[in-house]
Image (cartoon, rainbow, N blue to C red; front, side):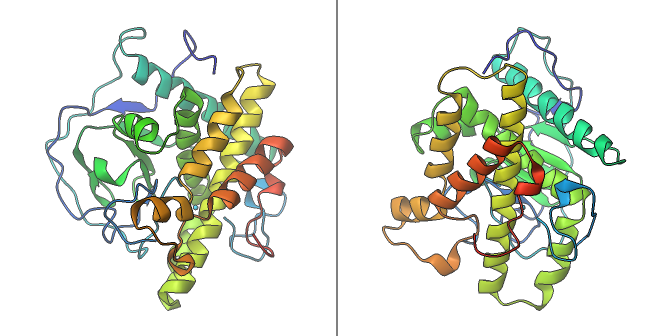
Length: 302
């Protein structure tokens, strides 16, 4: 992906090295939506009509590489985390990269919302190290990147990108960008009412129903990531192999692939994000079409 020297988002803050967050883990009872890593954590309508983002009128719309849990908001407030601007451009490649990708997501979704007479309010992306506090409780690097609806923020410990390469076999900058675009997709879902509806609906559901609902939300976020990939392609920012990197990442973080790798057995009823094939398919739908109306994961089979 062509990212060097390009504009960075002003909505990325740096808490790396400040540490000190405390509270309930967002992966252990909070409402964060995280990238599945095979580690701790449970295994796994708003009808907006004209706004294609919302894909479903009269039905629940659309949540990451991430595990939905019980939908109750975390209560961790944590102290000691100091937010700083990013280092000056050119001083930290990973921070520069994240800033550029986030800016591209903001450009895309601002256009889509504006075309539907809405205003896009960007998420804050927080870079942290080890642990930090969030509106959903404790942010722990072991959970992987996640989106917290309570404070409309994406949390990323950049060491995850090494894990993505070495543990998951998903190298490449576009695999990393896919993760960010997926998490921002959850933010879009939050803005248009998908996540609030999810939190309301699951109160009367059994665990298997909650898991199945989560899968549809995660696949829509994958499709939104594909929409973003289409956008950067139209801007002539893709390089050879980029899409293949994202498709490979989607394969490696499918529920079946993770369970096979970490448990040696696949248990479909515990899936929360979708199979490798499903994740690849929905990302590809978004990428090929560039049309958010094609991201309806709530009507029919997935």
